[in-house]
Image (cartoon, rainbow, N blue to C red; front, side, top):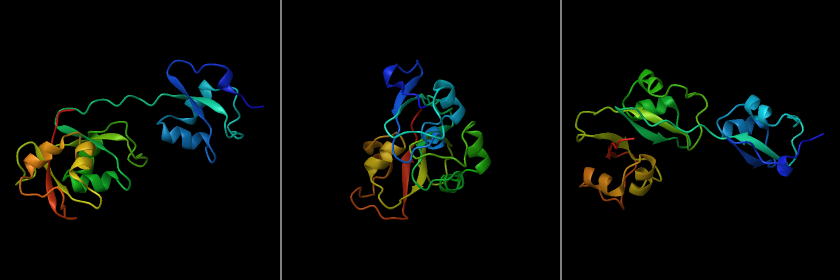
Length: 179
């Protein structure tokens, strides 16, 4: 027997989710930063081993990210990011990165997830910026989105860089904004 929640409303703090091909409670829990047990508690009648395409379940709302503390800046996880690669890219220790993100599982980062990067003013960087290595696909616009700043602020921190001719491997200065 499967439980169809389409006839009832999802309780406060949850939202309706329609099962898609290939979905499992595990994949849904990962996608929405919750657990299988949390989903099952809100859907006591579903059979977790027999989800049906088109079936509607109630999924707990993802937690609201806390603002980054002073001395850190927000970062949005991109494909291929790991805590190790981020620590190396932003010249911080792995321990500092872990300490700035309590409750974040570094082995289960999700694309789009927000984390906090400790602010380090590497020598040679203008005040209130950090050094960033240009990667394939980077644009001032995308970097502004990723680092919660503006294109104008990036241009001001890099007056000698042509935003239409970014060279992979070169350094940019990214302004640090308050969270």
